[in-house]
Amino acid sequence: MAEQITEHLTNLRNQLRLTSEQEAAWARFVNIIQEAISRVAPAPEDQASSRTLEHGIAAYETALNAHLEAMRIIRDALSDLANALSDVQAHRLKMETAALHQTCRSTA
Image (cartoon, rainbow, N blue to C red; front, side, top):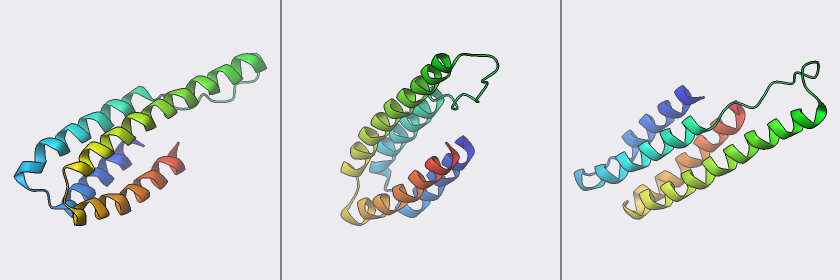
């Protein structure tokens, strides 16, 4: 998943055509995204023979909470980046973010 997200971020950066003044906001955005992704562990595999139902559900709950927190962090980072962009760039960010979100959902 991280490789696909990195690819999307590279493509997004190219499409936004950032000015030198916007580079710092972009760097903060990418660092926050990478940090959030590193905190999210993959969902636990179903190992019914090695754990109880309660333990399995608790593991899924933990994974879901980690994903939720990562999404909150990413949402705030997107907002900060959008504030540093022109209207045209912000529109492009919105369109490309939808594609990135689809990638995250399909690989999670």
